[in-house]
Image (cartoon, rainbow, N blue to C red):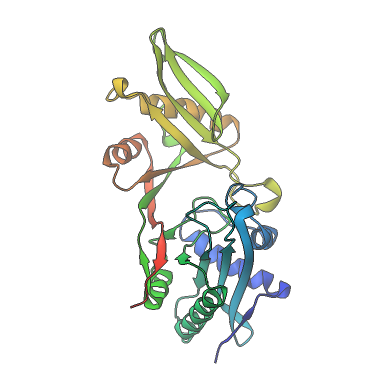
Length: 302
């Protein structure tokens, strides 16, 4: 029988292998270090708004024959007035991972269900107002519940979790595949600090046309083992009056030129699944769809 128990520090290498197995199914060429995984169990400094609201964190593993076959990380948000209303007194399975069954691991589904039972028992002990679940790993573009993890989705659904949020599309492009911007008379491109990274704004005498923001630092350098050369499009906006004039591709070209100087060779983008126009524009620019991810899971036992 598998054993479910609290995470121990000497589990760190096996846990990191389990994390990277799931990361690799979402974003090619990315893996995280042991230090990244351990740090994320203690705090998530990039979540500077919500992370201070966490009152308790628990990491559980399911072990079979001294092998970690499943793991989960849970958080309880405080119930005081400092915490945002949507998070106040909520419990969350931040991520839940398990090795799908194989000929040499025939019992992992049982281990996953035992671990899920332990997670629900922990949420019950906390007596939280709301039970949520996700698959947010400390790696670029791994959030929500990616469609490339059908075994994790099945474990959530068997336990009574249901998707109640939105769906986003994760896309990736090689910089070499993005369009090169042709000169446009009367257009000036300004580079400034933006809300989410370096911003490139296209302006004419009549005013702002649009902007794109890039992030070439998706994680702290000391915390990533592999994934150098990866950046993302943090914001892409064109004023409504200029829709249909291919400004999106022109701005992406300027962003690609800058990211190449930063040492990047691939760039991520994210769009709501329902925004078909934005998706079509990115696909036409050279992006390809990696997967879709479903955000917002809540526990609704039958």
